[in-house]
Length: 172
Image (cartoon, rainbow, N blue to C red; front, side):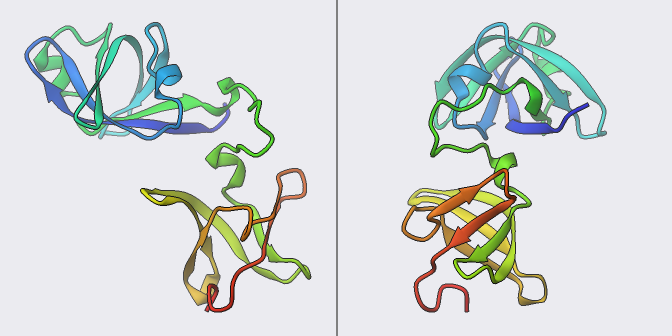
């Protein structure tokens, strides 16, 4: 089985008909939550079950999603806090050579242009001002690196690294 990737998290039940308020964790909610899409719901007890999207609509910064397997509020309450996941193997390749899935970046070595390793990409953080690479420096803690071409000029997935050209003080 390949890696499961987080695309959303159930915040709460909404209304009495089984609709769920979902916090979005994907750049493609229109694809991931399209009617007919099948997701894996990892419940709080760590069990996993498939759910099939029947409808999704934006509401106050979240999506209101209805799943075929959730007919009422009582059932919806059992999904509170569930992680909504997709199989990484099911994701289509990106058409944009400068676009990457988070899971492709996580774990890559973060190196300077001269090859000096400064850490490993732990995760991609999304902020209002843009994306940041969270680089684990081991004993040196973590550093946030703006994921922009001027600072991260090279992403080499096959080579297992990202090259950093940080401004002075960024890695201190």
